[in-house]
Structure formats: C-alpha cells, structure tokens
Amino acid sequence: MTSSGEVCLSRVYFRCVACGDGGFAADLRLGIHSRYSVEAERLVCLAAASWSNDVSSDRLEEFSGLKIGDTAIREISQRRGAAMNAWQNSSPEACREFRSSDGEVEFTTDGTSVNTTEGWRETKLAIFSKRELGEAATAEEWATRTLPVPKVRVAFAAIEANDRFGSRWSQWCRRLGILDTDFPMRSSRARRESHRAAGRDDRPESFLRG
Image (cartoon, rainbow, N blue to C red):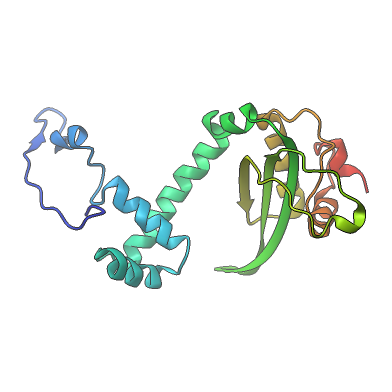
C-alpha cells in the first residue's frame, strides 16, 4: 500500500539452505520495509493524531482512497510513535535546530485528562521554545501586545506522576544546551504545574522557586 493506492509487486523469495532464513532480496533496494510504504504510514500517523482509529480509516478512504482498517492504523501509529519517541530521547538531531537557533528561551507546561485502559489519567505536556524579544510593553499591554512567533519548539509529553515528569525538564535543559534556567514560564497554569512537579533536587533552580 502506497500513498497513491495499492500496488502489486512480484519478486523472488530467497531462502538459505544452511540456516533456513529467507527474504525478498529486492525489498531493500526498493525501500520496502512492510506492507505499507513510508509515505502511506506518514498519512496514517497524520490521521491517527487527529481522529480515532475507526474515524481515521474512514477519512483516509474519503480523502485519499486508501482502504486501511482501524486495527492496521493502530499498529502503524503505535509502532511509529514508539520509534519517534526513541529518536527524540536519544538522537542529537532532535536537539540540533534548537541549540543552533537564536532567541530567548521560554517554557510552557500543561496537562489534561485522558481515558486509558487503567481509567482516567493525566497526560502532561511541556514545550521549550525560542523567540526573539518583542517590543517593550507595560503590564496593562501584556494581554493585547503581539509577540514574535517562536522560531523553534521542542515538545514532549507523558502519562506519569508529577515528580517523574518534572525530572525530565532538567534532562531536556541539558540536551538543549540551556545553561541559564531563569526563563519565563508561559501562563499561570504553567507556573502551577511547575510548582506541583518541583519536588526533587534534580530540577533547575528556577523550577524550585515559588
């Protein structure tokens, strides 16, 4: 299955008589790693990030003519999500653009309840961003002034306890090359979330201040 629809391929299957392993030797050259192409899986993940699996299946068929069941959508999105999470938490490339960009560092965090197999739990989100300084404004103008758009953002989320999620902040500061942790936190909710999570000594100093 490709992003343009279903394509039928015929190729030779080779099997080693010594060890018994086998495979389609042409798959590597053709870039075939599963039943679905990379671009098809990209569309699946885009749909799954917006709708439930069954609705995603309907939308993909309506928009692109792709007939992919909700079970396959769940498997693809979970597999790709796990791979993306591993890449984000280990690859230097995930931090390279942030480290090289100019601008002032900002931190935003929030949470919302999601329904899981273990009942309703809180999922937490945090965002480090960089933006150029805006024009000077009085306190009365803060709510109406227009700030420059952030140049770069790095976001991460998890369903876990406050102290565990809070410990990720200092880890990301180190990875992103943020040495001065006395930066603005966006919104009063962000400040409340930071205070709730600040229960361990490995948080940056600015996170531990009331």
